[in-house]
Length: 141
Image (cartoon, rainbow, N blue to C red; front, top):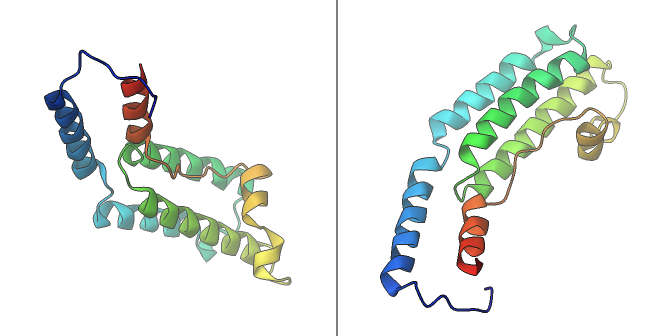
């Protein structure tokens, strides 16, 4: 809370804000079909038949998809779903790079999450709800 009360707002105004936020939540959560589409897209890009492609070529394509998908869905309170998708993306990318390198070393130590995000530039889906921050800022303004 911001600590100051706005005298111009009434009880019905705050209810309207909550109703708008609830409507946003209902309409913006990723459906199982959209999650499946993202998984299928990952499988299409990161499968054994695409190992010939360079990682610098594949990751920007994935980032473009992930930014669009995450940008559309992160306005709702879908942090659990986006976090699950983050794990899926990182896991798929780690396995793809491991197979690309011949699978000689330990799978999880060759390309940890931090290396994928810092060195390779893999996009991380946002795992915080924007509408909560927007409502908090609106109340404080």
